[in-house]
Each structure stands twice: as structure tokens, then as C-alpha cells.
Image (tube, rainbow, N blue to C red):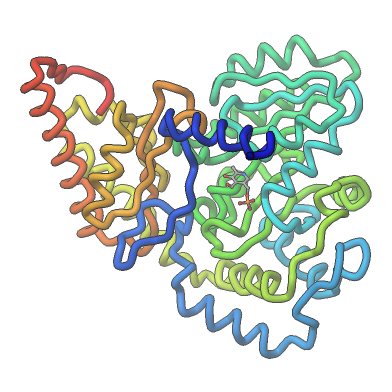
Length: 407
Ligand SMILES: Cc1ncc(COP(=O)(O)O)c(C=O)c1O
């Protein structure tokens, strides 16, 4: 007879399976074309990064493993110098490396807001910020509608001037909708309320700004945000993340961020990879990839406009956004569309509830520096083929609605 825990676990997994919401691990198919990963600059496959990493590893005399937490045996002059170099490159006053962006956000939001403080966040903020907020001692946690600066101003007005610190958490490039935050307006609104703006640049790192420094640097706002997060796991093809902040906040995080204190620090191979990636960024070697990426982004949008009739174009989650590498195609049948594209060797993923709200299910497309125009053309042709198949099928069923807003 099964024990009760096994029965409970089996039950919830069965429910997920029945709702077609079961998460599974998949392996990349051979010879597939990546329109899914966050490897925006295609650095994962770049011989230059591999060469630099290997040379860094072979010349370093540090032990491979860090040996413990940064606060015990896991710290090194190598890690501290890397932090200083990255902070200088990204124009931050100081920096603190965490093992991942998840750890950085969770640790930061759990410990920085003081008892009674106010945490305001964009409703689409990443799960790692929620993780931290859940543990924080803040008095209130208030969402505002995605990118709605007007609503944020109202919330700020009703909480400012009451002697509490106000934190506002946003991302610069949102991972699901692929749109950018109106950072200039957000900075002004938060400054007026004497709040603290925290910007997560996870997806913008390497993609926006001079030499990939991110959107805050592109807009010259680096002195007007309280803290910034840059992660290394997406365009930089590494692991880990850095929080850019004042030296005082860095010292506070070293003392109170549990996700830094109670974990083994990054090993030498991880640090060396981060160093190699930033060497490429800093030297301008990734600029060509950054330009190629933006050229491919423009081409994808042109192709979508040209080859998908106007109605399905309304299916883009945000048709006005045409300069980011993430495009979301809203669909009532995201699994069918994704499977159709996957059969033609395109790696794309359906994104369904609970990752996105019901009714906003989608297929998320990410473009990369290494995607060719031919690959983009073939992808758009295949999407069009699927759309036409859907319309025909619905015609046969007597229910075609060419005017509907979703694919
Ligand atoms: C906006 C955002 N912040 C933070 C993270 C977490 O970063 P990491 O993958 O380094 O843990 C992610 C990654 O999915 C993200 O998309």
C-alpha cells in the first residue's frame, strides 16, 4: 500500500497532467534552430568565449572549488576584483556577485526593506522578486498594472511622506511580453516620491546599451536608480548575477542577504567564464553580435508585418514593441502552434497558465545574434502556414472568425 505522501504527490501531478499543465524536462533536438533560449548574443557557441575561458582557467592558480560561502572560505581577491571591474564597466558605485539572479533578487528583497516599509512592484515582475518579498518585513506589497506609470504615481502619492521607505521593483525588458519599461518616467515618478527604484536588467544585459551595458546605461540613468541587477545566465552565457548598489548597501547585503551568506560561492570556472564574457563586452568584441541581433529583430518584425495578415498581427502580445528580441504570439492553441513549429525543427515554447494569466497563453519567440534572415523567413512562413490551416479548419467547422484578435 502506498504511503499518504506518495498518494498526495501522485494526485497533484495527475491533476496537472489532466489540465495539460504538467511541467517536464526536455532535451534539445539535434539540428534544431533556436528561437527559444535566452542566449541572445549566441555567446554559448562563440569560440572566442570558450578560448578566453580556457586560457583564464589554465593561467589561474586558484583552486577550482570556492570551498565555502563568500563569508567563510569562498571569497577570493579574484572575485572581489571581478566585482570591481564589472561595477566600473556597468557604471555602478559598487557590486556584489550572487550565485544566480534568483538568489540576488530573493536575497535583496527579503532583507533590504525594513519593518513597515512599502514595496511596490510591476505586476509582471519575476518570480524571484516575489520570493524575496514573501520573506521581507515590509509592511505592504502593492502591485501596479504592467508599465502603468499613472497607476504607480497614484500608489506612490498615497504612501509617500509617511516616514516609511518606498521600494519600486521593475524589469527593464520583460521576459514574457518582450516590452521595455518606461524607465525615464519611472525614475521621475519614484524620485518625486523620494522612493528607491530597483531595476532588474536580466534580459537587457548584453542586448541594450553601449557594449551591452543595459537599458539604464543606454538612458544615462545609472545615478538615479537605487540598485540594478544584471544576470550572467542569459546573453552572457554564464551563471550568476551582480547587484550594483552603493558601498553601504553592499555591506548590508553581505551581512543580511541569506542567499549570499548560506550558500557555497561560485567556483573558479564560473567566475572565469563571467570574467571572459565581460572581457568580450568591454573590448567591444560583442558589438558586432549586438548589431546583428538588432538587425535580425527588425527583420523578424518586418516579416511578421508583411507575411501575417493584419488580423493575426494583432495577436502579438504588444504589436508596438519592435525593438526587443522577445516576441509573444498570443494564441488560443499555443501547444498546437508550438508543436507545428517544432516539427519543422524550430525550438519555440508554448507558455501557458499558470506561467501567464489565462487568456494570455502564447508562443514565445526569442531571436539571437546567430539566427539568419533565412531562418527568420522560414519561421514566419511556417507560422503563416499554421494560421492558414487554422482558418481553413474553422471554415470547415463553420466557425471561422477572421477578425479575432488571437491566432
Ligand atoms: C527578470 C529575471 N530576473 C531574474 C532572473 C533569475 O536569474 P537567474 O537565471 O540568474 O537565476 C530571471 C531568470 O529567469 C529573470 O528573467
